[in-house]
Length: 438
Image 1 (cartoon, rainbow, N blue to C red):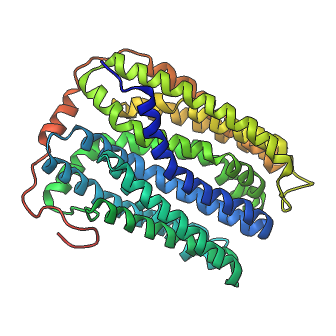
Image 2 (image 1 turned 135 degrees about the vertical axis):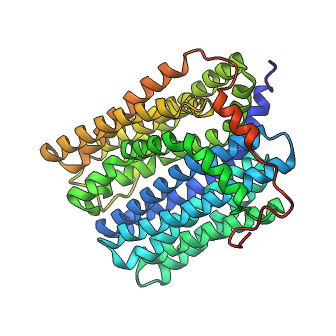
Image 3 (image 1 turned 30 degrees about the vertical axis):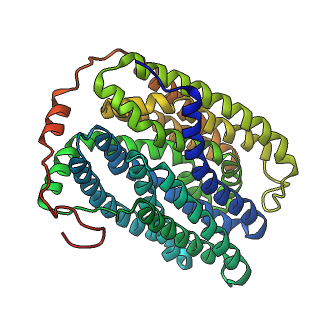
């Protein structure tokens, strides 16, 4: 198989990263500013709200966005692609609403004033994430980047106004982020000249429910992944409160651009890897996995060098003096570096529908994370709990790589063939705009 020239790959990645960099820059700047402006408890609440948003994004990606990208990438006609977009759009809308309600209830347990604004951030951020992935699957990276620019511009302006004028700065910033996510999603629809599709009709429900049987392992897997990746945040907040999570959150936020790079790669490469797997091109997807993993690891090393040089010059008033900042920084960087190291093998397993294997791996990693974190919380200050997450991710990385190196039959599984063939061609008017009844 012929691959596009590396320069072409890098141009596409630069376009994708342009949008991700704007989002990352907004979150990064807000975190750095709020570390200095907010009390530890309020900053911990803000950071944990972003953790809940990340949970929402993870569920949406695994249960709606990733399957939508895979099936749209395999669609042989525009009509079928529209059907897939509508079916998964309805599922995403339902899931995002549920995640918003759950997040509001959780935040209300220690910060009732921030419950509504936090729920709005989680729900709208998750929905925009789904729409972005669909935009990439439809090869509209330019429209996605434009929407990211609007998100960042509105976010900066609204957050600055909130910090200057709002009596409750935490609540004001959360509402600003919710507004920015709404504006970004609306801009994406306008730039694509296509309204968000949400098909709640019988045929779409039948298709998704049939697919949901196969996604059951994905649901289990993503839950284990969340417990593994965010277990430290949940446990620290539960054991010691949001103020104890503040120093960990501060260092994770500083290295969060590596996570944004990981999301960029996933959005860019998921459709291509799915097509290679569907064609049985083992040589092609192995080459793509190895090449992009190497590039990702080199970027992690470069960003780590720059980060450790900059940390001593940061103003971290709320966590300085009594927190092991350098220790947290080292393991915060290591956490994201490990995730980047097994990102491509993970995407490959998803494209091959190996959800059961992913679930087993992440369950074991989550068990390690929880066991080590709970032990550390009993014998050491809460800041040291981050070590549990690094150990859990390292185990998952090793197992994911080992599984992704196994050969597999070029022919798709019978279950996958049945699902692709069983997808009904929608009748005219089968899809509808999000928020309207079919």
